[in-house]
Length: 254
Image (tube, rainbow, N blue to C red; front, top):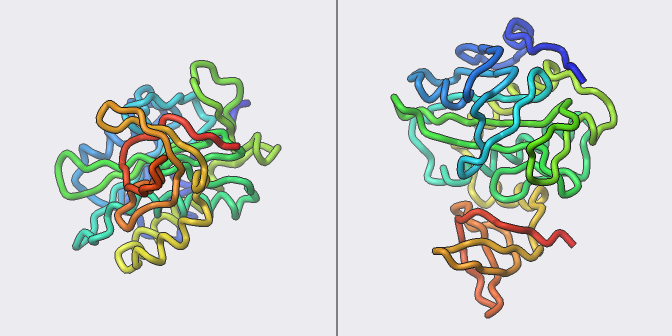
């Protein structure tokens, strides 16, 4: 399925928020890398295709041309909030809510930063620091109109498949950019308790069995939510509940 091209002019004219600039590139290694080499905040970079898109722990993100959303934006907090470790969860919550406004249901976040629908991955979030300044770069990849893409080693789904209709990426991007800008401004003033209450609605793995590596040891347990600093709380077979920040290997969904 060939999608419409993303229009920077359309996004600039229709966004309610004051982004410093919005750029759309045809092809780039990574929108995150592009913005990490800029010192200015509130820049938006989108690409029709990425050749070196990455997920968590450097995993490659498949990037067919003009079908998905590859979005990065830069942001600087005047004073970094103490709860900065919860930012990835907050961006995930905002993304899940935005997709809900487009008619999506049965979706949520697989801790800490993957968007899932019916146990299939739809997107992910990657937050990195700038190479030049205190600016943070927030990257979001979303499968929108992609079909039959080879080389993906896990169950995946596109938004169009979940909604059973093609998705206009420009219209979705307006909703995303407006929501994300507002959410970044709100984040500084949010209490961790309020954020974590919001998170619970979208937490897909709470009370599910998980396995993960910790110091080269394979551990298993049950996910029990997240800690005040964003770590995964796991109830181990001993009954002890401990926080972990390592990646999850598997989730037993049923």
